[in-house]
Length: 310
Image 1: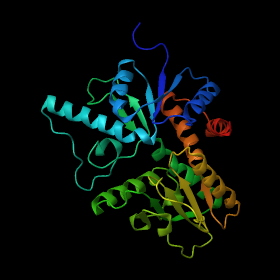
Image 2 (image 1 turned 60 degrees about the horizontal axis):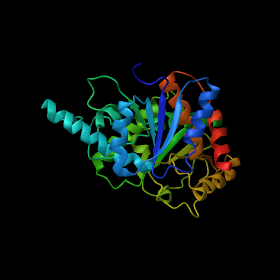
Image 3 (image 1 turned 60 degrees about the vertical axis):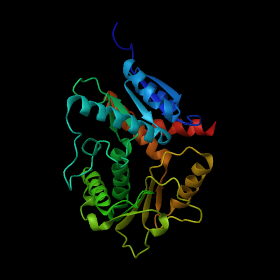
Image 4 (image 1 turned 90 degrees about the vertical axis):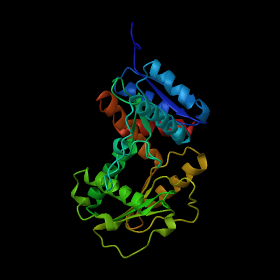
């Protein structure tokens, strides 16, 4: 018998304790009647490359990668691609100037790219057996669109909080173009008036400028690669939607965002989508991507809340 008898998905991180992803996936798979095993593995950075090779050999379907393993996975992928290019005497592909950044076009250049899932590729034509994907890039736009629709508002400004915002101007412009493409891909007219000049990539939430916003406008604030940014004393701005894309299961961090969400009952104060809410949507998207099966994000969110409440 070739391959595995059923799909296997790994959840990797260092440390992995306290991560609800395995429990949430197993709960969602049971609800969707999906036959798949999920394994959580604590991987130190030095063991990531060997682990990916082993998962390739054992034909794992995919691996959810916690932020603590992002750099190690990316370094392993860069090594694979360089070796393939040298073996074939073909230079690694570089996107043309001004090209929109995607996981495929950027490849593994010097810049760190956003991803949270690696999917196993079985084709012999690929330079690496693992394809990097970002579920967060797929879900944050639709999540924001849902709020805009409910409030019958349009996005006035997009504030993207990124701890790496001190990069070159060319790199920042590529990221802005990618963000604009992500929201335009939702096909929601609430984003129609948003342009590159209305997207700001900043390092701290305190750089968000409070300006007069009309009743049919919302400022959207996204915490991206910003776990080092302290939120103490920060409040949700009026007429805003704040989304946390950080995957951080520290209890104090979770409590902080829970408090922010509790303060958002008044729409004039602003609304909040926590990292746990985003994670549940990501796992729902993962299920759709890998198994073409619909499992509502609420199923995963209930499992996450149950796990974290134990």
